Structures are given as C-alpha cells and as structure tokens.
Image (cartoon, rainbow, N blue to C red; front, top):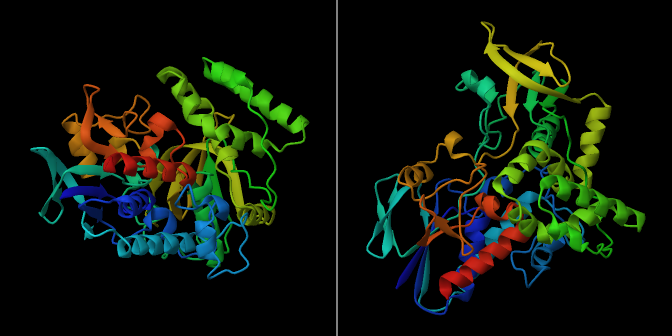
Length: 454
C-alpha cells in the first residue's frame, strides 16, 4: 500500500488530504501530521473572534474549483441569508474545512485509509524508495511520498527589537493562543506594521474595551484598501497584450498603471484591473529575473499588497472609524533601537519617515504585526533547517520561499528536483508569487493530488 505523508494540517494540508481521499481509487494510506492539535484550522481560521472576517467573498472560498458555491452552501446552514458577495467569519471557514475533511474520510473508497498524527516532524531521511520521518516524540513513520504543507510562520523580530525577546511586554506572535490576554485596557500599545494583521489586532483590542489610543508604525504607513460592495459582478477589463512583453519591473509598472487608468476611463473600478491581472500574475513574476524581482520586493511590494490584499468592507470601515475617533494612530517611521527600563516600560527609538531626527517613544507593550516570515534564517523550524543544512532544499535568491519545479518537487542545492518530496504552502510564492489565498492554493492542491495519484 502506498503511503503519503502530509506535514501540516492548515488549509494546504487539509485541502490536499481531502482531494486525495475523494479521488484515490487504489490502496492508499494518508498520514496528516500537525503539531498544534488544531486540525483543519491553521493560524488564519483558528480564531473565534467575530471581528476576524474573511478578506475574500464567500463565493470565491470553496475548497473545490469545480464547485464554487460549496462554502456558501455550507455557511447558509448557520447563516441562511448569506449572499455570494458576503465576507463571512473566519471561524466559520475553519468549521467548513473540518466538515469537508470529515466527509471525505467517511466517504473514501475501500482500501483508502487515513490517520491524523498529533506531532511535530523534526526531520526526514530517504530510506530505499521512500522516507522515514522523525517526530518530536522519537517515533518514526515511513512514507513513500512526503508533502511539506506547513502554512504561514510567525513574524520575524526586526533586528532593533531583538533584545526584547523574552520580555513579556514584547509579543512577537499575536496569533499564539492567549497572546493578548494580559494587556490591560489602559496600556500604551504600539503595533509594529500597518497591514491586515495590524487590523486584526487593533480590532481585537478594541473589542476587549481597550481605552488608550493604539499607535501603529511602519516604514510607509500604508494601509490596506477596502473591498467594495460585491453584490454585483461586473465584467473585467480586457488585458492588453503588452503586459506579457515587458522585460523590467519599471516597464511592467508603467503598463499596469496605464491599464488601470484606461480601465477606469472605460467605467471599471481599479479593483477590476487588479482582478483581471491576478490570473497572469505567476507568468508576470516568472518573466522577471531575480534582480527585477528584488527591485519589486524592495520598492513596490508594499504598494501592491495594499491594493491586492484588501480588507472586508466592514473591517475597513471600523478601522477608518477608529482613526477618526483618535483610537488608532498610524505613522511612517522605522525603529532604530528598543530598550526596557527599571519600571518595565519600553523605550522605542524611532526615525520618522523624511526626517533624520530621532524620537523616543515610551510605551507598555509592543506587538509584532509585520506578518508571516519565510526567511529560513529567522525561523525556528527543525525540519526545514535540517533539510537546508544537507542541501535537500534551498531558498530562492530573495528568501521569500523555496525552490520547486513545475511539478511541486523541491529542488536541492544542485538544482535537481527530488522525487517524491513536494511543497504545497505559501512558500510556493518564490515560483508563483500568488500562493497565499484560497483561489490559488486550492488549484495547487488539486493539481498536486492528481499528480500524486497518477
């Protein structure tokens, strides 16, 4: 019997397991490994907060590319009035993943078996034609194929803040269970970052009655735009052929700007232009060499992110209201140094954007809202570290993901694709760029499942 090991049971691991369980028609055993104990949740969908809402409309959140209304159908059992364009609670999506996994297990073909392993895979080694996985409790599990489906990792602590590591007033990962529980309602809180994670944390504290204005800083102080009302489905503008003929990021930027302007002149919304570009984003990314990609990451990614990764309308409205009421203050600055004092207060030395004058800010708590980290140098992940040390996986030049071939096989230090060792995670972004949202990841999961079963 063939044995497939899936390391990680967030969206990617769960989606792949479901596809395999549904499609397998020969003897197969699936091991689903997860160290957190939260099956089919991951960081994104483990929250129970009512303020944590999906940033994608319900009609685009189905697990299955060929059944676009599947999530909406599930949600209507609890929310009968839910509409295709609604932005629904994230905890409901976690329930959906769990339900569809349970269904797939119950309906699997004879000869197909499944087990859930609550453990941390810390290493793997080739054994004959398969792999032996070592778990953190010293168990060994043998698999013929392995898929690394670990999700988003914790934020990296910026170098100026590293001396705060271990200080209870510095919260490096706001997604850890209970991470925000000990913050008094009148504490002076600084949120490091101004993206969607900052939105989540600010609203969570606000819901808990936090009464002192929150401060957020980032290098540019750019805030994610809000989605528009999704009750209507306009046609998307037609893409110009010139977009696929650019050789530099400067030329591509000019083409995208011109496309958005022309689309608006034709009566479209700029969001329609972004949506039209989305399907060809992987091809645009792959057409750039490593140097051009680096220029994008350094100078343009922040602007792309606030247009591409938007907030649900209700969330964007609440953030705007908090800012208007003075309960959330956002400014552009970079951190130079962080120190703590005898009375436990934290001192952050900042340099405001456009100025050389240093400012010192006294606060009670710093919360890292900079978003997931994919740089292996900053991650405490034994499996990835071990594989990297042996040259069995390598990061791309810009350290945003791992190198894979067209069939999701991890490449080694010699640039060779490794048989039966695959990647399905946001770290695919080094090859595809678009690899963080459900519409793209579900397609990758489906394609990899068919490949594994071929």
